[in-house]
Length: 204
Image (tube, rainbow, N blue to C red):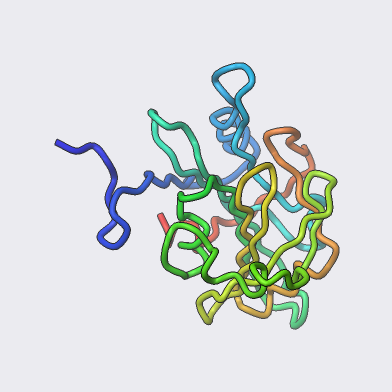
């Protein structure tokens, strides 16, 4: 018997769990899962837009991992008005160890890591966007993602950081001086919650 979760394309994968609903208590319970069980170990970050842009809400949370390896990737979904046409938009923020493949799944590209799809990063080209992550300016490069979305990827706290937006034009959000905080370090009491994101559940 093999207890691994398996994908028909990628073989063994980590199980991915999504909270059915989202509110402060659920977020607190997920954050408790992420805190390291042994002294000196690093927690997997759970990135969130903070402060939330006007009209934006937290709309879901998920994590990848099992009882043996612990949580090795997280995703937080947010929804709000798009920066250009003010129509509805969704953004997911993924933090993951190399080789997990959760971020590429949301970006709509194959494989476990974004390397072959990063536009210009290997050639030393300047970053396409910068956000402040836990107070530090962090470069993000565009990823050749699926046509219905835009995706950017960088590195923070030694892990991949993905920002994937629907529709594709909502990717301009990353140009709006965004700041991200790690909810494992601090859970703002002013977070606003909305209806569950369909994008998290479609990947579960």
